[in-house]
Image (tube, rainbow, N blue to C red):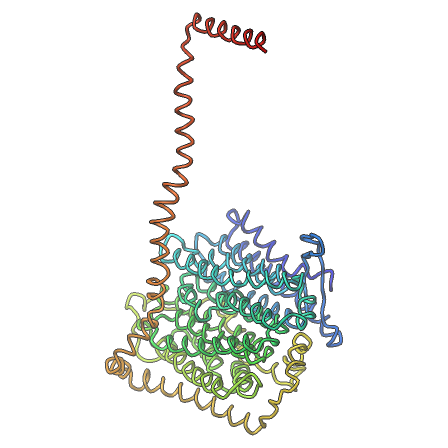
Length: 638
């Protein structure tokens, strides 16, 4: 398999080149077939590689393919090389599998858009960059893919760039991610300085020989990058605005690419993180705080896509909570199940928008389950999965995280309690959204209501497949089902497992685990029940509560005014400094002054010299005579 790994990222790159260069001349059917077909070929190649990986003994489950040496100087070299091990296998299956369904769905969703070929070209490039990120065998290749997904998110979030707000949303995502990427770069520089290599095997195998303070600095700097890509406090602000792009783009960003990059990177570097309890604590605290913080903002949001955006931020927080308590397998497990139900929810939201002429306001929906039965039932499955209801995929991965947060040597009851509270709020706001959109009286504009229709099969079939995955996807995490995901990932996280060999955690009994599981499920059921009472039984009650708690409601509705604070503290001062100092003074007076001064100097010299060019022959003859006399005199006097 070592010889064919390059084909996995190659097919999307080829699709990008074909559609990008020639797609303008193709029909939508041809463009869509090329775009989706490229991802399907990557998925099939990944399945072959995965099958070969399973045939090996656990300790030997890794394929590395070196294509060529990218750069070499002295003892340092970086190869363009791909790594296929259990972690990258799971990530690649998610990226290509879920990505393929999103591409197929996009054929119906983007039908008639004048940028159809450009859309599929960018979508293929996005997938290529993410595959480069998860398959890279060193930090530099990972970073190349890291920057690639950042670029593609900018291109796709601002896809309809004619609208200024959409273009600004793409720019906001790009700039906020550059802040995080600066931290990532500094972390890589430290790795290079202290390890002399960026290769994963060399760095991780020598990690214990590097001073603890250096490891802490590296891991914290890398985590700064993760907070940008994976939208954690304080760099989460770009993700809600990313809803400006086409809805399938949101599904791809939230489920299969981009935002999962930070979780993958931290998990890949588990051998470093496990050596720094401080870094793990920071990751866990930021993760659980983000999970709760984002969940509260979703409570009052009236935009169906933004509710899901805050949901993604919150669920990513759970993944970082798991990584922060050393449960890296649980983080990847939730990343996988989240890909299923979050792609389902976003594509379901797209189906609703497709039926309502792109309406996203929940207050202008209602009663849609009668008109959109397939969308409703699949959306409901996604809601039950993310709420953590037993039997659905989210239950298994969410409860695994909460259990590890409680029982791990790096965890605590406080982390469990905050995580459980966030889970209850998640169940509430997800079902608030479901009830507002699909239940009650219709609030749809009368003209739009005349044309409500279920989406075509090219959109509903991916919804059905994702609904099935949202049900069965969690069972791979059960140890006795097949091999259990944690057991499969064990070789990748072996170093962290050894460091936690004291998993004194098994200090907590099975009874305790079952009790905590029951409590978390009960909290989720309470959240669903409260949403039912407020938005189905007593639909006037939410307005009354908003009035009685006006201050809290306003705070949540305005997202804690974080965007306004950032605007006042960071954006405006930097814009003012740029305008007053860097532009009007430094650029105009210094840079332009020097350039213009040089031009004026030469202009003045030229003005003097051109007076000698009179065009009078006698003057030229006199000049020649004077020159000859001067030369003759010089030769005599010398």
